[in-house]
Amino acid sequence: MTLSTYTITTGRPGRPPRRRRRMSGWHFVLAPLALIFVLPFAQMILASLSPAKELVKFPPPFVPSRFTLDGFIALFTTTDILIWLVNSMIVSVIAIVGHVVLCSLAGYGFARLRFRGRNMGFFMIVATIMIPTQLLMIPTYIMFSKLGIINTLSAAFVPWLASAFGIFLMRQFFLSIPAEIEEAAALDGANRLQTFLRVVLPLAKPAIATLAIFTLLSSWNDLIWPLIAINDDSIFTVQLGIANFQSTRRTQWDLLMAGNVIATAPLVLFFLFAQKQFVQTMTMSGMKG
Image (tube, rainbow, N blue to C red):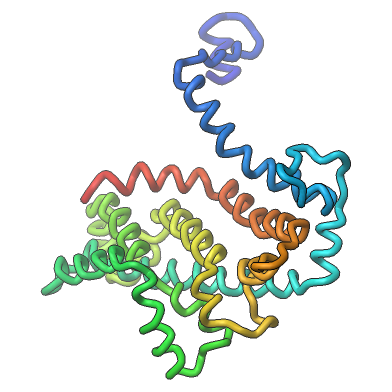
């Protein structure tokens, strides 16, 4: 209720009283669950601010005796963390752009275009989701080796240019958009590509944001494939660089915890920025099959 509406309806000037949200039984269930998910992040941040000697104790203290930035200082002075972050950003940006462009075009084609073998083609693409990633690594490595992109940054982002999940997500969202909107655009003289770019794609911003979130999480956190395809320290991604802090003989816990905080921060910020669109897509994409 706005200020003017409250004054007219009640005859009393002033602001409408705020409604207090009532406590429900779900709060007693969700609050402990939220605490369980928050605790590991809190422990990671506290460990990154702990002295290195306290991290090797068993069990390590949850709250350090004193806070220090020695782990972060050593991370930025003795490692190539900035280069690794730049490499991961390059891989993630290219992966997000590739997913948005290619998956949107493919998803729209499977949702709206009528052609022979459409359903079978979509089924075959979705079926690839059930193939374990480990089975594809050797054929992918052989193919990339013949292309000459092994041990280059291209080997890290080429597999993320498109995915079956991205095509499935965009198709489901396009199916939730009324076809009458596109028919109205066609009556105004717009062709199929103009309708897609000027009418359908602006309506798909929530789905695009969700696809960008999933792509960023997957490409940023990818470790197994870069571990196989990249050997040069100068083109390490951030996850691959942090993995080198842990070995069979010695683990640099202060650098490991500080690196995890630096690597996690961009993901948290990006999700907070796009969480509204993420929730909206999850509710709309399940309306149609």
